[in-house]
Length: 135
Image 1 (cartoon, rainbow, N blue to C red):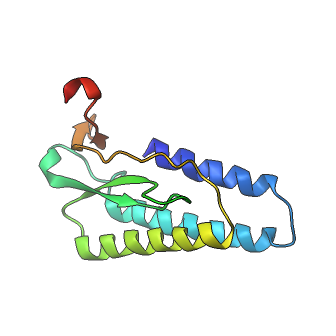
Image 2: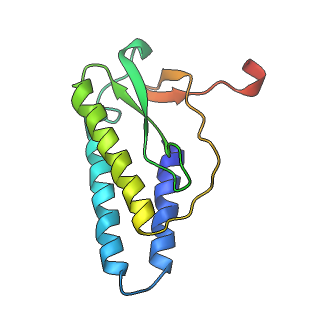
């Protein structure tokens, strides 16, 4: 989650540092992506539902890096309408892919490792990753 936020902030900084006649259109497109992401985050219930059992949570890839692959992963409660949630996550990913192409966005080409699962930490869902020493 923090990595995805960092990526979004980085993209934002790139756009604010560039100036051309398309900056207002680019900003509008960027704001639309932000609105879509906030809606998905709200639907996921990661900030509003108490996490007491990790079996009640799952995750999915979200977003698109400019050179391909997912921008990150997001946890979501299994109590939500999964079909609607995943459709919105896909729409966001597709929109970010289109944004990246339209505005010639450049990003790192590292592969974002999928999480091993979701764990509950202090009542919040947290994506868990296997460290190389745990393999």
